[in-house]
Amino acid sequence: MNDMRSQEGLPDAIAELWAGRAPRRGPRPRLSVAGVAEAAVAVADDAGLAALSLQSVAGRLGIATTGLYRYVDSKRTLVEIAVDHATGPPPALPAGDWAAAVRRWSQELLATHRRHPWLSDVEPSGMPRTPNPLAWLDRLLGALADAPGLDDPMSAALLLEAVVGRYAALLRSVQPAGDGGTEELLGHLAGARAGDFPFLARAVDRDWSDVEREFDFAVGTVLRGLVR
Image (cartoon, rainbow, N blue to C red):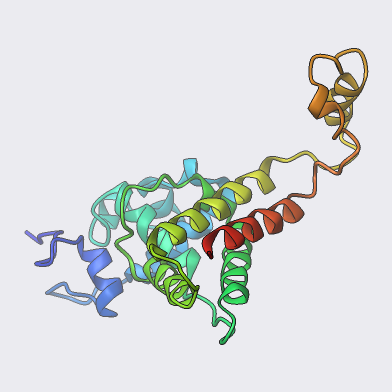
């Protein structure tokens, strides 16, 4: 029986991503882990993370669910390889300006989340085990290494990742300007209930739907707080 765990303690599917080749013995499989990951991303893009399962991916590939176990050993592994495929390699960052590099990194990761909105639904469970998310983290740490007076680049990197994830989720859920429900709520804040929410009442005229502006402000605030 094929052992789904590699000698390094990783599932075979994840070990294959690192090695760039299939570690299994025996006949060459009809599919590849990369093909399974691509199908998993397609399922999640179409129907969201909740729809991603061994059964749904097997159906998309036209194989039995039991056959998919030749490639992935669990739902967790399936999600991990889907995240790796959706994330892709990190972007090149501008040299010589650490703050511009961090802004570029943050904007590119937000754009990745916009292409694959379900990424913000993935709950972190520790350090990533696949190459691409780790490559993104390493690229950010490289930019932060040039920040003057920054004692803990890893904490800063994790904070920036959290900021991107939060605003990516907001981009999915925020109501557009002119939405009736939003206008009704703002009307309450500016009208009869203004006394109950005095500080919010002062801000009712702002564009609450401009999440990207808020994102730029948040990243800029983090950058200013990182340097002494």
